[in-house]
Amino acid sequence: MRVVSSAFAPRCVAVFAMGIVGAAGTVVTVASAQEFPSKPVRIIVPFPPGGTTDIIVRIIGQRLAKDWKQAVIVDNRPGGGANIGAEQAMRSPADGYTLFMASTVHSINASLYPKLSYDPLKDFTPIVTVAETAQVLVVHPSVPATNVREFIALLKKRPGELAYSSAGNGSQPHLAAELFKTMTRTSMLHVPYKGGPPAMTDLMAGHVSASFATAPSAVANVKAGKVRALGVSTGARIAALPDVPTITASGVPGYDASGVFGLVGPPGLAPALVDRINAAVLSVMADPAIRQSLSEQGAEPKTGTPAEYAALIREEVRKWATVVKESGAKID
Image (spheres, rainbow, N blue to C red):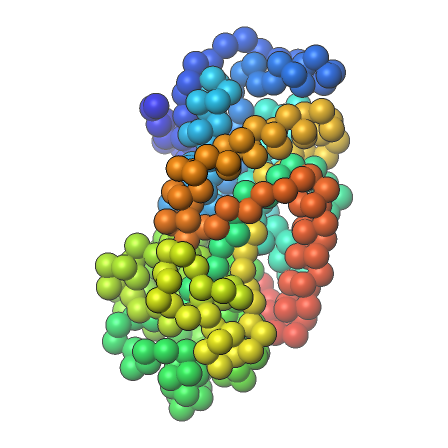
């Protein structure tokens, strides 16, 4: 395997090369779907390298490249709260050779942005879910709180004094924190960053006090003692951090801010191609080594049919629209 990175900011492209042959037309027939892929496949990631979405795509992309015997290109297109990458994916040919790794942010943006150039429900073709992640409430070691209840008490004692970092305005960590504030009736200052890695870096440096970080970006730093984990946002504890309790069991009943990741394509992607890509990803996700690799990063494997993913996206859009409304979250 070789990884090639583009020198042109702000995007970063990594290529998992397993032999590049031929070319394919844009007219999709059953025969051409059966031959897919006959050239490199690009997966657009709307965030910088090193973040949760990027980590998940690279784990899966390496295996897809091996199975397909074609290059799988991870194309990082950060910016605009994930909207830049999403718009580019939407406008790509519906031939299966450009895919988009959607996340819960994709669903959040439907209500957070008053004007979008696309409809998250109508302008993409759901293909397959791949993983679910928890948000981890982490604090700098200097923060005098060792559990969620102590942290809530600290916030109420010092309203608006502590700052929390997020992966950006409208990101899932941002909304997870806003939901936490609403449910606990507390106040924190929001400091948005351009992606999860810089948000975590400044937390470790002590420039902010807390963060609701996606598990893949938090696990290694928690285990290294660089940050302290107080709780996870899912309904059950996660395998990567088995000793960290859930937030809902730590004094905030009903709190749930898990995130879902999955592959979608441009609108009008042929059902035969959707089924072929879905089957390829399901095969990858059935590999115990892949499942373990994702789980170790704090991402729990989650798969299903295209119809199930479409229904999940609709539910996610509805759920996060409620959070946006009740929290009053806005794009600064």
